[in-house]
Length: 431
Length: 119
Image (cartoon, rainbow over all chains, first blue to last red; front, side, top):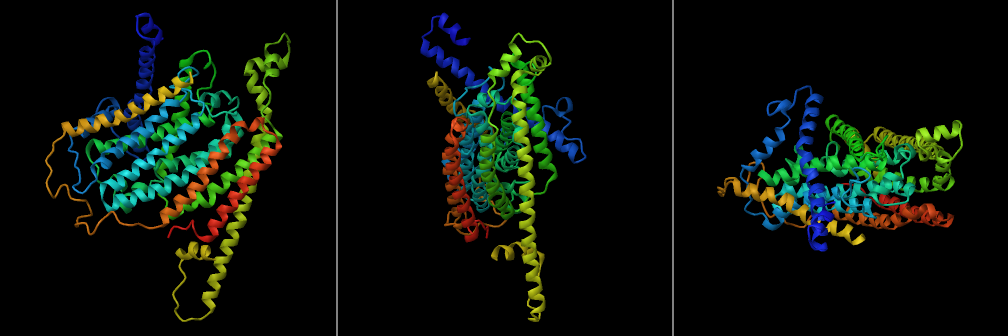
């Protein structure tokens, strides 16, 4: 639209294209920043309710412009630069962390027509871009020249890169079913929501992406009780605010990503005709997912670093890998149906019940339903088998530990140190 | 068309860098600047920091990074397969199953060797 108007006004085509792109970029990029001002207030309100208090309620109606006040206050605060810090690295770090999150907004499909740019490798781009954040946090820890910050940064590298494996593996299931990497393609391919056809992938993706966000219960990168504040300990004023902003923005973008991958994105009644409805649907779904993640954050205690890495490498990664093979096998048995037949029935001259159902619910939805049902059953089977295997493995481990207790008790080595429950994991692993 | 898509990402890259840089610069310009030796000292729970921070660090983190590289490369190979999966024959499934199983065995070897222990 803008491009045509500019060309008619006598502008060079190259410049018109550039300005058109630039406007799109500014709208898409500032979306996150603007949303955060509201999002932080919403989350603080929820947090207040979860903890039986009111939350911010002074600035503006119901405290809704509290975030603006906070931002203004932070602007007037001194940016203290530690004497020993590596200045270029120190200042580049928050910029990099925020940029890595903003870049995700480029490919979010808000509605059939509203999207920054529909890259053919959309989901891969999201994964690639969001992993830049780990480098930014590493730079923050290293550049601060502070021991706590460095410890925090090392943990981040271990945590963020570890959890990237199950995140990407579980995002692969929607890609396999939809047969495309483009974000719009993934939404268009979801005639039945992928949370129905691949619930295990959805759960895996949710857990792994929460860990990649670095929020409670996985907020080891800034574990207050151990590392004071982790990687951002030496930051103050606006530089600190940027880390805060990046975290909030990222958590909402991950909720949007979950909705796009598993909850049908902008899909809903009438979304194809009225693009605005698509935006509304996407936001409703994303806020629901976001609520669950905030709920988790506010109720579950933090895990230990070794527990965190064990959960990933000894549970999520093997499970995800076997799940990918399993889903590939099931998809060979129940391939995605050819939809042209269903559309013909809905559009055709036939009258009767079948045709009516097809028209009412949408031909693609009805035609995909049997396949989604098969996939759902297969997923239930997978969960049952996985749970049985897990139960057996942990039963054996427990028995081994109990054998050990017997040995130490009857060996009679007079006060050779009591057996403590904390030894469980180590002794089991050593064996 | 395709080039325009990537031009968008290119411009986005620049804007995404500018957006966070501007508030930091503004904060630096608007806020007070009164550094003193005590304020700019490295923070460490009330005591003076001992020794250098930039020292050689535990190898444990390095091993996790190496393990990650194995599986990251695996996923790189998996994505083209996943996109084309509906159009591939049974051989593609069998081949990829063997590939993933090999890497699963890899993971179990690492597990047994104790590379996944956080000590």
